[in-house]
Length: 382
Ligand code: OSB
Ligand code: MG
Image (cartoon, rainbow, N blue to C red; front, side):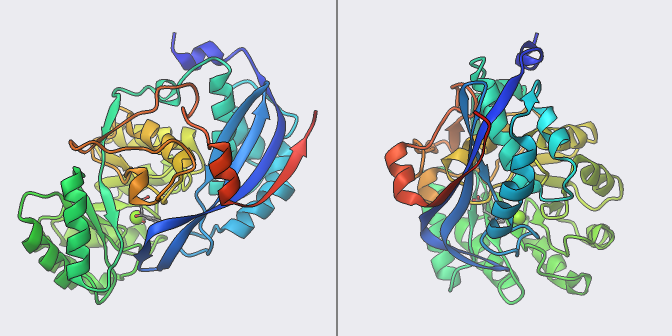
């Protein structure tokens, strides 16, 4: 019997839901084709369910650039719509959360944060680690690192050198028009032919830029991530037919259904799974299953999460169909001090999967207080 089955008959009631907005300074600015972030601003969800506390992290950003979701909107939809619907509910299985919240269209990151918090409490009620619930097949996961656009290629190369020394197994470079082929050439020359490199355009190009991607073919990249518009699978399929480097989709994949369609139409050969983007941990597992059934490689992406969200990503990265290093970097790559015990990458480029019940970590109360911007109990049913 799996841990999943063991819990099925014992419901937990959602007794309270609290939203906590936090701000943590980043150790260095993170620049992508859609903007620069200097702090990590996130909404944490704390629930009480079945007498247990559960934590989730909403991966929305301060501005609606990566997706339509953003923090102020996420706060509003959780407080006014999703939270009230969930409060007082008996949750027999974590999949009930998506069912209860399904009346709201979209808002996947907010739904995912609530689901994660309830799932954490539900798993703690039987002492089950999230990785076990997900059918994890490893205790340590290989890690990559995502490198923001720097002011000069030299600055980027210096930062990458430090990551390689620290053990990271794959380096992902953010690119944008005007900062692509030249930067990749300089980095490839500096690191040599054996370092696995990829690029992520965050949808900054159109099919008319196919020449850029044909030039990038020369640098043996593991993949090119989300080169084109997030809503254009057909153009990704056309680009894929004209280049050698595999295309990985990030923004375009919002569900397991999207994943199946994208793979079947030849729009991608790799998928970056982010549980927030697809509406939760359970849907993330379904994306993993759909890709595995079709022989497509997946890896676990990131949204600069604090330890609360990172714990979920690392558990997902331990699933058997995850075949490439993820953007699951060490806490120290982002923060001088995380909210939780820090996640550490060893010199061999691997990180331990949390083994405690639920997500296996929780915010330290002093650190949480120091980082809190506002908090509000949005539902309490006693
Ligand atoms: O496109 O993968 C992305 C961060 C914020 C928003 C989008 C993306 C990213 C990253 C960073 O690439 C991944 C990480 O280190 O968490
Ligand atoms: Mg991406």
